[in-house]
Each structure stands twice: as structure tokens, then as C-alpha cells.
Length: 229
Image 1 (cartoon, rainbow, N blue to C red):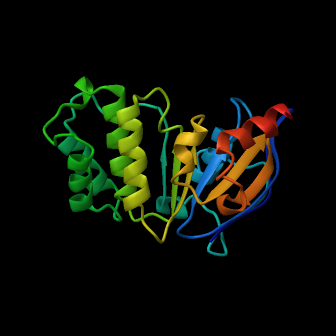
Image 2: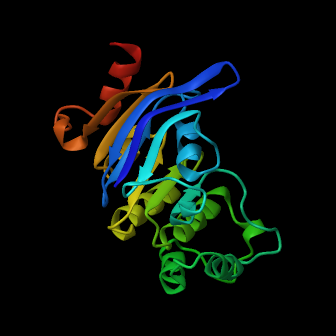
């Protein structure tokens, strides 16, 4: 279980997160949604250990988060993480050498499922192919927390479907996954819990099952919440 209590983050005099209170349960996939600039990435970076919170509590299984236990967290964004000389199999070996919880065999299976080849050079892969590889590497770790920041951004429909199907079927069931995306309806099928954030505050925190998704799409709730329509 992961707990965030009254998390606040300031950059100088600017407050970008406030009153963030979350209780995240193992085996759940959380969708974190909101317009650009409302604090999604900042929150994920705090949880990943890349940014320090200004105040509040952040606990993993009842223990205060420290930079020593961030090894149990995997974070992916749209930033380039590979060296130009690497082949896919080199990236897999790099993860194996770097992370003790990395399952090499699982990753190589995922690479094939993602329609990739281990001998492919990474610098000639399309954006969608690189995104698939990042997800394969991330979910091949036996982590406590998986943080996926806009993994679908700018991708073609085939890449989006492959990534979402993989997350849905092969995520570590003892882990917690948070995904951010502007493609609200695309992500809706794989999440268990909905989080809306606005101006640095969580404005909706609910189980997806409590929403009427038979008559409405998740995007309808999103538009209503942010446009008040």
C-alpha cells in the first residue's frame, strides 16, 4: 500500500501541488487525468524520487519513502533513455545488470509480443516502437510501483493498443500502476480507479466501477469536471 498525506510542492513561491491525499492499493491500475500544467508529472516525479516534496508524508507499506527504497519504483516518460549504439537486446541486458528485480525472460517474451526484434537497433525504431520497448522493460521489473507518464502520447493506434493490452494482461499483480494520458477513453479499459487533478489538487478520487460507464464515456466525466458542463 502507498499513502500520500497532505503532499505539497512549491517551486520558489509557486505552489504546484497541494493537499494531495491518496491511498493506493496493490494490484490496482490508477488513471491520473488532467489538462497540461496541473501537476501530473510533478506528482509522479515526487513518487519516483526525482523531485522532493515540500511538505507532507509519503509512505510505502507503512514506511517513510527514502531514496534508498526508490529502487522498488519504475518510472517512464517520453524522455530518451537509450544510448544510440544499443540494440534492443543491449537495452534488455542493461536493465538486467542494473535492476535486481528485472525478469529478462519475461522481457524478451514481451519484446516479441510487442512486434519487436531483439537485434533491432534502437536508433532506427519509430517513436511507437521505442514506447513499446520502454513499457516492456518497465513491466518486466517486479516493482512495487509503476509510474507511466504519457506513454501513449503521439503514438499510432496500433502501438497504443499493443501497449495497453500488454499492461492489462501482464502487469505484476502485486504492484501498483499509475498511468497519465490525455487519451482518456483509450486508457479507460485498463484502469480500476480514476483520479482527476486540477490546479495541483485531486478533485476526483473514485473506483471506476462507481461511474456509469454504460451510459457515459470516461471522457464525458472528464469534460464535465473540467469545463463544468
